[in-house]
Image (cartoon, rainbow, N blue to C red; front, side, top):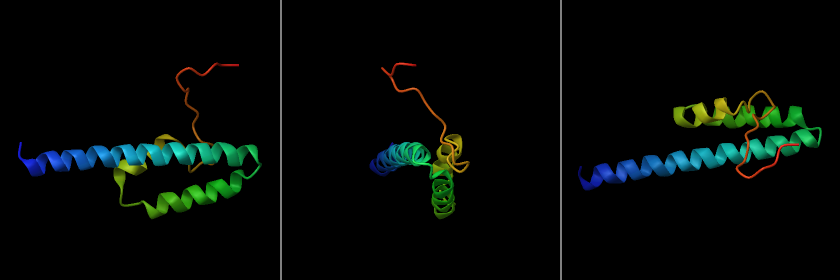
Length: 84
């Protein structure tokens, strides 16, 4: 593996982390906007974000798995969180 191969792999790993963080932040924003009764506004925003990233299949896979476009972000358990 040459130096350029390692750099490409590192770039891919960084891009994956950035995509995951972006989707996590979008999920949090969606949760907050839903609590504020602004679900339709978030759904429109999420649709805009998805359209703007249409050429990023790795991002879209995470975005779609989080169900952000439906206006109700998929919930995930956070380590150490208590269930009610």
